[in-house]
Length: 500
Ligand code: HEM
Image (cartoon, rainbow, N blue to C red):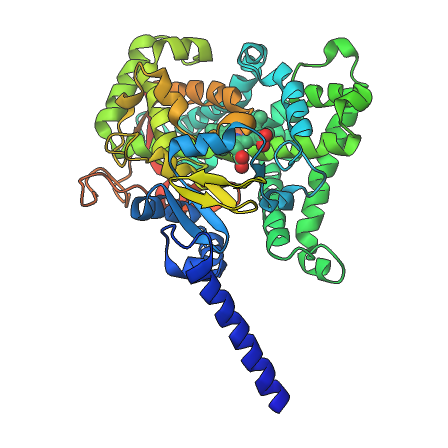
């Protein structure tokens, strides 16, 4: 009994010592932040698990400003210059967090190796560079928005002329994004891979498995692995699907091989040691790209359409621009859209700024020698998280950042480069050009083909405003690597009618 009391006393004294150090002596003690976050990471981890990370990133930026503490040894920065300085080079390496996603092998997204990250960029540039994407544009349009319009047209035809049809656009846009990435990574429609729903399930399960591995690093070892057997089986099926696609591609005569993402990876593997690409890495890279290139594209379009529904004047202006520029065509190519639809493009940028589908932390580690931000010295090893939502709402950078105002991007290419939604610097999103080439024609085509309206029972509508008079957006949830609507079935309903 005495031993137990002594042990408890020692543990309490130890905890008090750690708490005193974190509150009074830590080199981070003068940085603003919520006191409980200085003591333990548990509070922020529980909020992150509840999907609240994006809300916290935005609210904490408005509460604490350019720099604040979000956990013991964890600092969050939102000043765009500071963020770009961290992201500019490979000096601030990606944190351990990313390793949880290396469920097959290290890949372009998870790696901390500058050599590997740079090699992958070179290999993918052959396919993903803006100039190369023109070759894939037909495949992107056919598989994505083309197929979505065909489905919606069939739905409308089935209801009879003039009737409005109610659709859940989050699911529809996710299907379209998965179809595009399946075409580019598997080289075939998602129906041939196992079906759209199957691919979506693999993506979600893979992310869930990464999350479990992050929280419980030994979860994949027996006997614990039995508890996550379904997730492991789903990961294995995902791997097998890509392995089959690689085998099918290798069986094709060289002249029939398309210049798509899968081919870029296969070519790198065929380059021998210089390609730094083993057969397992081909699969790991392909899976990373399926995940990185689907949900985020879909959710970005979801937020854009949602904000347009909340702002009728912006919606009317975007619709008028598309229908004036393309009165006779329902299929709009990227180059034409870029040249003739500046306002529609600005709407996508503004949605990416105000509610980025990636509006959470990009965690990095302070290198040897330490670093200084906003007058605070951070010791080496400190986790420094770039707050994408914070930087995108930065008050000194954006006028009234809480306001949806697509005009701020009109004629201002520098403003487009100022948002951090695609990250920046050494690890800037390599799929940025592909995403834009997918999203702009898709939105333009939807606004050209259909009149959109909120249903009468919509909870979030233009008249439902906050204290500043801005329409309140639907609640969001941060799921794994992406921020989407919290209740898509409830909040992503629209009525569509064929446009005149
Ligand atoms: C609107 C769409 C997209 C957004 C907003 C977006 C955003 C981002 C961001 C913020 C990062 C940095 C993540 C980090 O450092 O933690 C990133 C990385 C990445 N993205 Fe995208 N992305 C989009 C679409 C795509 C597409 C279509 C692809 C497919 C090729 C893609 C492939 C990747 C890859 C492979 C990385 C890892 C790069 C690295 O770490 O070096 N993304 N993306």
